[in-house]
Amino acid sequence: MAKTPKTDTKKKNAKALFLTGQYQQKEIAELVGVTVQTISRWVNTEKWDLELASLTITKEKQLARYYAQINEINEAISMRDPGQRFANSKEADTLLKLSSAAQKLESETGVREIVDVSIGVLEWVRGFDPEKAKELSELFDGYIKTKL
Image (cartoon, rainbow, N blue to C red; front, side):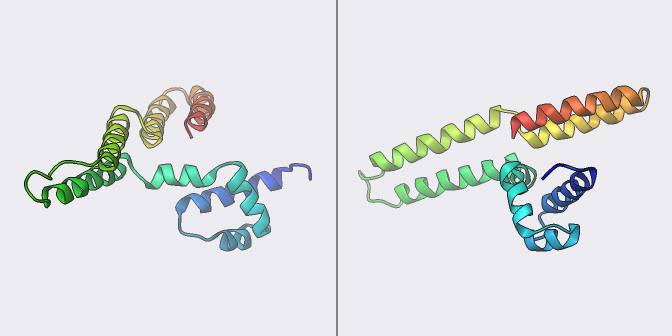
């Protein structure tokens, strides 16, 4: 099936609805006038679910989860009898992996931060050069897609 401007509009509308996180695929299909299979294909081929996750799961939330898990393991260890309050090999491995993941997350820039900075720069440029803002918008969009 050839891509048409009407299809592009439907896809953009469907994506916007999907990224709100408030609609099921069936509802989106009905609202934009396509089949559920079409929505499912767009979600899977263009990885909308990853984009939604990057918008809804903030770095702070994920870090809090890592630290809560680390704390839970440490609490379980501290409840053991004296002389037994150390991590077994499985716990040590899990603690190491969680700590490493938290450290990596703290040091890298997330998609949400990139989007926020991109929007700020575009708004600033738009104030004095709307054409340059359009050009930059396409570049930012391409860059952000590489980070998803």
